[in-house]
Length: 184
Image (cartoon, rainbow, N blue to C red; front, top):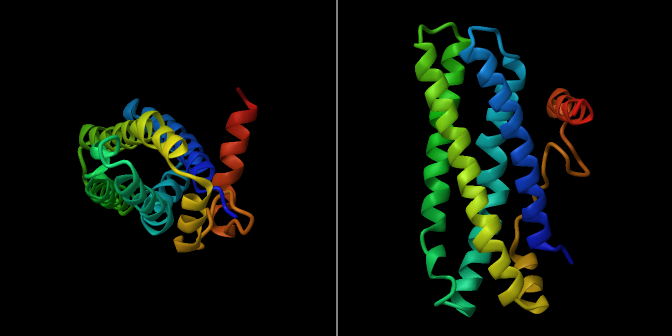
């Protein structure tokens, strides 16, 4: 049986790593330098696909189960699906900006930096909320049979970056993450 809560924690850790690298690239861009656009593009592509297709559906199922089991304690989770949609819209906005930069569109540097930092901050804030409130409540309130029931309902998609069937497309990004962690 998959441990959906542990899986979500791991996905958050991966996304945090990506946001750290994106933040570094934005700092280079903000200072007038040339970021590694291939890395930026891969990070944005990852956020365009994996969270909406696999990660957020897991969380939405978990939230619905919590609302069913402990509605008073889970009341703040009622808008989780809407928050996920807002993050998705923000991701598409940043993807459009990155595409514009890559296609040599004239975009004000400060606008690119502001939008990308807003994306990074929103993602981090959202994950912090889930790590501090949502997942601890799930660990406390849901039984093993609840989690087993959820696991059978989950889409079987796997993290294309660090899963057992990691996609070759992300090889350069994966290497960059691992190298940056070794350099610390």
